[in-house]
Amino acid sequence: MQVCVNGMTITKDVQRAVHVGSRVADGLIRWSDDAREKEIALIRARTKDALGCR
Image (cartoon, rainbow, N blue to C red):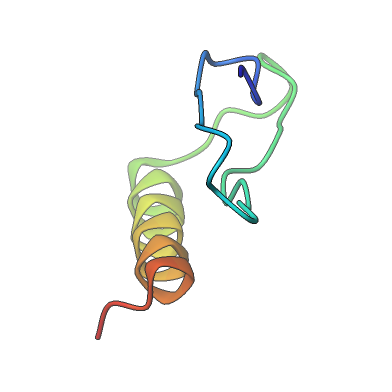
């Protein structure tokens, strides 16, 4: 079953999934390299939390 517009799929045995990325309209803001790196670090940290990784 497809659950996200980016093509992510899950099987029926998955109870709950959380999409940790954010939706931002393209072209509105020109993000700095520093801001992009920090957002990627945040997404990685949230993904680890969601998966129960320490």
